[in-house]
Length: 144
Image (cartoon, rainbow, N blue to C red; front, side):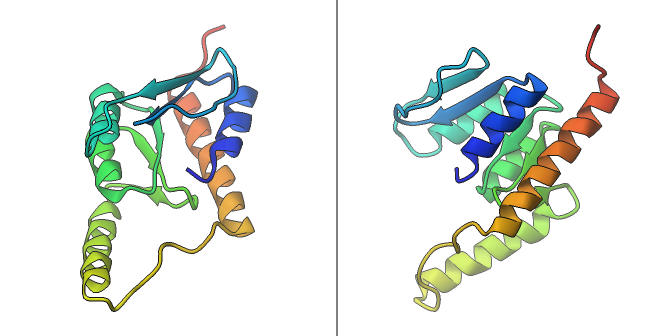
């Protein structure tokens, strides 16, 4: 994920828990609110773990469109790493576009991966993350 540092900063500011899911160990800040969940090194193990544990109104950050679709079905909020939200209204289009691009890559029409994250993507990501957090807080005000 290209936006980990932003997630850490926002989570710290709002006192939110963060769980990173990966199939191998990685260095993460030593914070009580941050958990690294290491899963088996097999296809879709991390995605399966996330879908199994995600709760309604959790926020999932991913560029993986099939994972986004699965999390939306569990009533989670899903934000792409460029700040574009995945919603019930746009996930079908995102899946279709992903499938088309996959076919074009297989045919050799497209080479290379996604472009690097731009400054505007980072800004859009932070704005979208803040909007989602605020909407969840309005639904579920923190207890005093």
